[in-house]
Image (cartoon, rainbow, N blue to C red; front, side, top):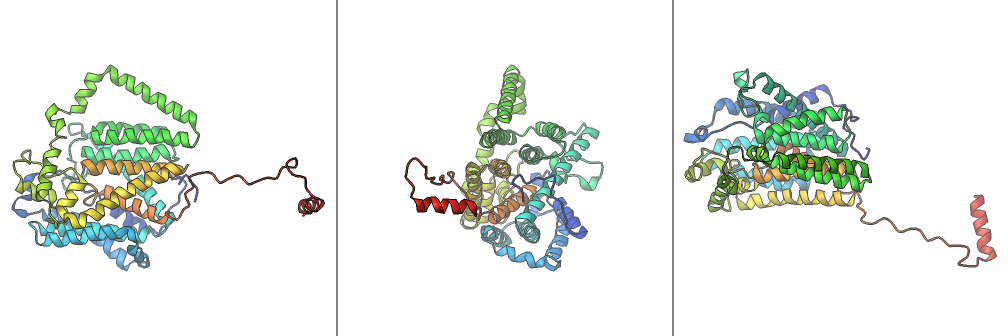
Length: 441
């Protein structure tokens, strides 16, 4: 396999039925929807919503267990899954005695099916790369679809979830600003670091979608990715590329300073300075979560929902989201199950930075950029605590790390071989004869 990953050159030789299953799996990960506090009153959930999500996952689960690639399920024994299994299983068990047992069971099934699919699809380094390539292509097409939907329905734009088909309402994740910004960020990272056809046009379109998202967390993550890109260009001695990119960023900063008032208004998004000080209310949510956190949680993916009833004064804005993977994990699964999982998150991100710093490889830059995006979203979003596209990307990232861990990392170049110079020593006749014979051979 080449060093640059070459997304455009990787061929998917999977059977047709496997490709169909992969597409079903991708659609099932589209879990962003707009939920209000009323959706969780009386501890109830929409049966239709559950069935629309569980039915395709049941198909994937049956295929993974009984399909032609079931012998790859031995991958589940790899240490990369141990902390995830603890988090999922214990979170489900806690949920069975919680206030929303069906929700915990539902989310647990989603995570388990995701791991089953990745186990049969990502069974070595090459197959893992292939799956990541295909997944990113799906994401990019989905972003184009979002742009198209926004153009034909400008009254809603990127901030709503209404579609022409009522049964799709609430199930188009990219229109959610955070989801839109996150997915666009991942595609931008792909296009920046890796070879691709029609790269300038694709960068321009995805960049426009990214700006429309108006997600401040994603903007911050992208700024860090740009910094990593410049560093990668310097490491690979592409100084012209680094100079052009730095000049382009300087020009953007100068333009931004000239329209500072307008950009500030966009950044505030109608919020006051007090709202920003509390991180749009997140500090209140996180404080409430810590007050109710225990060794055993209230159930997988129920942290935000249960807290909405326990701390109604804090959630006065009808919010049902803690906006943090860390706090959602602790509140939902408890300290015992969440700490190992969160350590896996942090250690994998740090490890990828370490690999990037000691290697000169575009693929290391790509996965470092991906780690930045996932790390930023985990602070301000619950996407890595529950099942969604980001969660799938994280598991594939973990598997890739586990399959490439044996690669040797060299901090310093190897020492130069010692060469005997003719003037330093006076060779004997025997040495001269040996040298002559070596040259003749």
